[in-house]
Image (cartoon, rainbow, N blue to C red; front, side, top):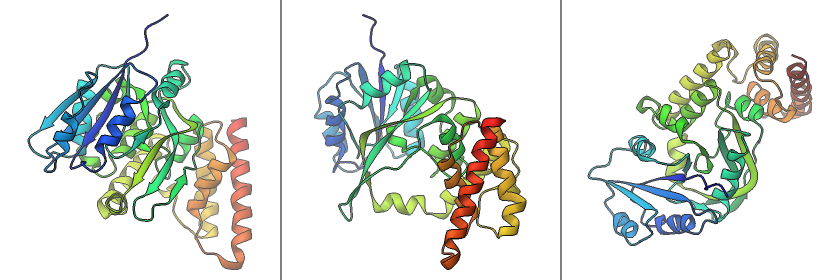
Length: 308
């Protein structure tokens, strides 16, 4: 029997005492045993370091920073030290299902993709509510959806180590560094996939929401969004944003054609989600007509992509 591929699990941590023990334990409980868990304590001021050191499993490797340097430095330092064939991301407050590594390694080893995310559960820490993720799964859909946002839940992602080593996270993309990473990976031609099984429980905190909605994150996202469109020879005038019906005729519909010409095989539902960004919300009695427009344009775009 061939040796199992080594997986390097990347876990940055900063003041994570409340949750990190359960995150580490979820890794140790994996059905796939051939991994190294690299934990980067980014200068925590609580007892995060003591909790990390309470685990004695030899597969755990630690990096202890004297001062807080930020998530980007932590992620890149882990990737540089990683010895595995694959790198799996896991935040220090999330929980991996026991078969996560096993299922993702099997899919990556099959040669179907280079970066692999999964479906997941979301727990809202304020309300206590649990929700199922709603995602797309094919390479074409994921790359098309990058035009309007990240199609991955970042801590579910596992991929070839060479991708993370060759595309380090950039400080100039701070607060949207994950989106920037996926954009660059797509433009380099790496293949994407999401597994349909829910293999992670993702904790949603108020602090995360404020960062995602903050001005700096929006600015970085916009810059990378335009960069991605440019990489597909789509100009900034065609960037998805609410516009009038006449402008949709002028910009939105040609954009959908160009996108599906560049990325063949985009599903109608993925195109439907993208085209919705060109329409205004709250159309009242006109809502059925805007939805019909959306469906017709999406179907034509998908058909054009198949024929092209």
